[in-house]
Image (cartoon, rainbow, N blue to C red; front, side, top):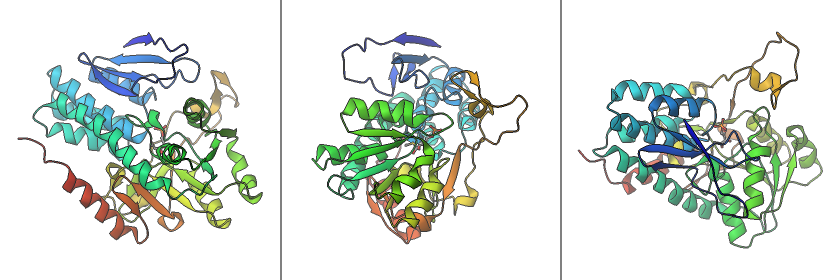
Length: 346
Ligand code: MRU
């Protein structure tokens, strides 16, 4: 894999999270943020799978684009497409967008053009999603978010951060509590970096502080993204999300989930059927390369948890805002989205 350091000094523009670039998949190496803005290029499906597994590229919608571009790489390099699809989908099991992106390109006549279209559509979708969600935030709203659901987790703009960003653009003046999000620290490394660049006021807090903040009356709502939403509205998102939803319910605060319809898996009846990724123990036992737990300590590193639909106030998508009962509202929005897209070519 090729790495290149961008000329980022004094330049507030951020390159696309992921793009097709001269026959390779070019992406921001998210492992290096916030210290360095470094681009990574994958020339083979194997290299792309390594980048996905190692979280150089991550976040459900960005994984959808990565899956699509992986299939374009497979087609361009003459690989067996079924084997390539299976290898890509096996890298990370929870975010349904990965398999969604793979399937869309698998059926396309021109894999590269389809993958590029998926990336473009993702940004447009997130802007529409943001516009639908911004009105849910009160003026001067204090929003708590978890993990990273910003432009880095997508082809651009973001989902949960897209809602906050749209509210900011509309002059609603949101401020953000950013959970650090142990163990991989997507909050402190990525969300804090994005909000700083966007000029949106934000304060970083340890994950354990959410209850105290809500109890002190310093949070108006929670907005998070999603990796997979089941047909009944159960939501898989970064581990720790379920706890936030319970806390929000206890404190009578709205708990919003922002995700494109490609994250809704109508084939999955409930959260119990969502596969939860188990990640390497080292993510928990080490911090910035230093060991912080005794050698040989048993570790359970489930990367996601499932928030029951009953705790979700609304799901914000590019097609509108779904409210309970989710079995009906989500199916309606997914149907509207598939009606919008032209069928894949022969
Ligand atoms: O393990 P990650 O970093 O890929 O997980 C991403 C998340 O869980 C995000 O919270 C998210 O909402 C999905 S991406 C918008």
